[in-house]
Length: 161
Image (tube, rainbow, N blue to C red; front, side, top):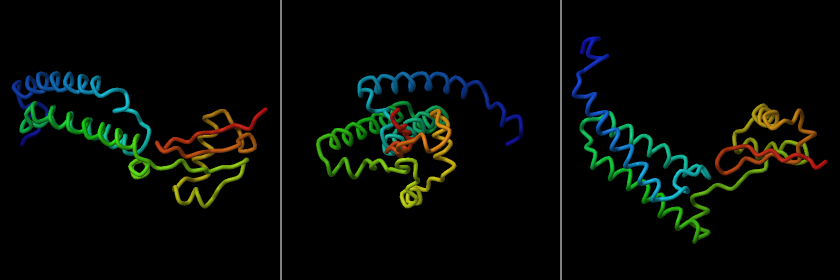
């Protein structure tokens, strides 16, 4: 393959990408509207994986000529359906919920680091202080707690008053 082919391989591929990409995008939007807001919620690591998988599937449909639109739509629908089943089951079963979701972890309590929890979660003091500063706190003296949430975000709880 020469350098010109790396830049442009012809109008047929461009037309396919535009046509199939538009239809795949419309299909994904429709599926997401049908499945509800929870499908793309970032409540836990499992939700993130599904969101990334949806994006990866859409990308594959767009760029790989060997994947037909019907196959791509089926893959998108399957991912959304499986996400629905798992979240449906996790709302109704504590054991399924526990298997899918991680529990929040307390990293700072009353201005003091919880070093064992930080080591287990692989969070540094610098990362906690960065999150505190982003929340308008200059020091841990102003922080009652820092919690690593199940979606990976750090929640900063300020001291009252």
